[in-house]
Length: 95
Image 1 (cartoon, rainbow, N blue to C red):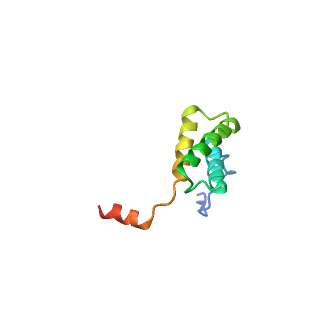
Image 2 (image 1 turned 60 degrees about the vertical axis):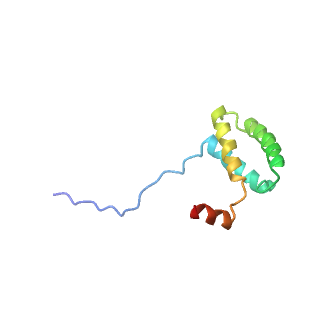
Image 3 (image 1 turned 90 degrees about the vertical axis):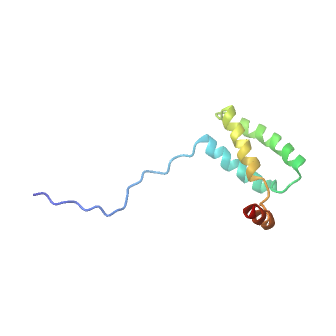
């Protein structure tokens, strides 16, 4: 009878997967938002900043499709919104 091999529970993983172009673009956009102080900025300034930045991102990541670029902008706009204050959060949960 053959001995039953015991597994140590540790899994062997290959090298980490390379992020997709969309993931790279998303991460880069979020870094730009943080670095440029977009969070909480004047809405007109944010709109102008996103217009210019999305043009840059389209040049930097030409492999992104139009729907991906649109989703990227939506994610960026959400990320750039200032955090909700405690009073807004408490009022929303009380309703």
